[in-house]
Image (cartoon, rainbow over all chains, first blue to last red):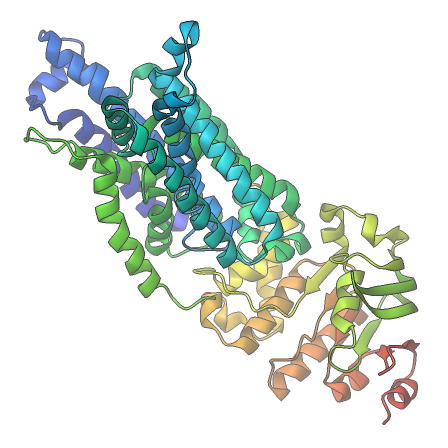
Length: 342
Length: 233
């Protein structure tokens, strides 16, 4: 009943999703004629280099961007309700600085420790970076949670998150000061976030991890509806808030952690898309909003990936440049425009 | 079903607000909880609702210790209308009242027709029907208060606890709410506890009174005269 009211909007979102997917395959820094792309996708490509660009570069990147967008938007959505704070999101509460620290320690901490022998091949590969990012973000997220237990005021918690973030940034900068040139470059490139480098294996692992997060989020749609009124309110209507809180935290951790591990800290999507969904759908129904976030998050990330690849030019922009330039003014707009609530 | 307070002591860690409260309330009782500001009415009500732990003593409802009851089970026994004003972006009054039916929704937040009809009926009884499609953040404080009460009624529990349900209402709406609660208690055989500073209405509509005097002594009264004498009328 709630879904049918917004049926048309969902149709539009699905069409946009298809457009975002197709655009990512057809547009990129290397100009490939549309007919060639179609031929390659239908298995009739005869140019080996172009085939590799489309099938091994653009296709996994396109799928990865869509998954990342959905996951980030969903985790931002759940965090905003859990912390009852419109500017909450994986980025603001320091999870991505944690991932930064993990990767920085791995890539630039060689003066303190290094992995030799059998381990070095794993730890200094893309998989090692993903693991380092995942560990880093989980540790910081747990710290924020411990703080969340003691701090009842969400504004204070936000400040704790910000302070934790800047303290971590200081450590990362310290590591950068002493890092060698190539390690430094590798690290900085990682912080730019990217979908284009994803391999199909990585996308597969990403999809598997995220699907656990998606299933948990679907289970949380109902409790989230009541949690919008606050924790003790949700309790009186029968929501086991302790259990719900734990599940939401695990789900956001899996979703945002996975994306950050494989794609780097993608800025603003997790923060802005849930607001965009609320503005478009003008509803507080968490079922509608959950599906809206999944679709719109994917659409936004897909198109940002296209813009980042700067079709027709020799340059490519970091994904974070695109999401921040589009996202930051939008968040300011939300804060100004939002109807009065406390 | 019966509500029993057994030598109940309520308060917070460092501070005890109320000692040795003993009372019973049977089906169909509409209990007015009376006392001056800061004397412990809200704390008492929260403790009875199981939202706060008792410092000592017991709250028994239907022979179950409310402190030991699971959240899910409790939501089928007790509904609470607190003093908070809901501020949820883009949530309609109808959706807010329907939150009381949470325990009946499926995992996609969908309610059966019968439950939806009940939600509409409650909004009509409390003169909220014309606001049903408005956003909860855009209505007045008094209207929000009625929505909070409607939400608690929608939960359809044998015990209802309301903390100053008429504080923000005009004189007409205060009477509507008291009349409606009295009717609910009588016709649906519910036990309703409502703290209030609207003494005249409380004396007129309630069937029992739990009075806390200025020395924090708790007295359960069966007649108006007794309650009035404690409050120095």
